[in-house]
Image (cartoon, rainbow, N blue to C red; front, side, top):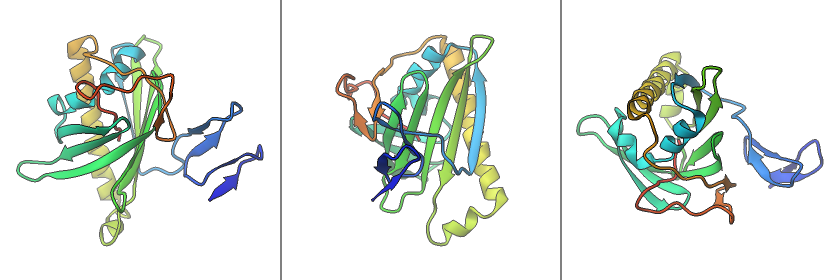
Length: 206
């Protein structure tokens, strides 16, 4: 299905999509969100963004990410957990603009979340990183998101992971790699190289 935007152009009936004047459909910030957290890091935008694209390094600083495997150029499988508990799920990058923006969606039969991360320069020469997530639980779990406590716990987890990333990249001082490609509607653009499987996994985002 498609709906009509104000400019009369039809775009896919996907939440958060817009059609710009150049005819390219791009994602806009989530119109609805349960979690939004921001952290400032003391490295330039390019450095912060480049390191973020190195998803396979997330287990090195994350408290919950145990493994990241690239399945396709825009799809990765994430394993998260505490102690012996593990949960594996796949996500697709649907939008990616170097040094600016990355958006993802879950690929489960019943997706549990979608999200985005933005990178903005600060006056001090650092980077403000903002993560937004929309929780989409199903069944009994859907009732839990109505609880402010559950939302607060999720926000605390996201905040903690952002702080961990801040400490990680500031400790490194420079990125350990990068993928500088562009993704539109879940597809790597033809003028962008596909990320090599051995180095860069395409997140998550989320």
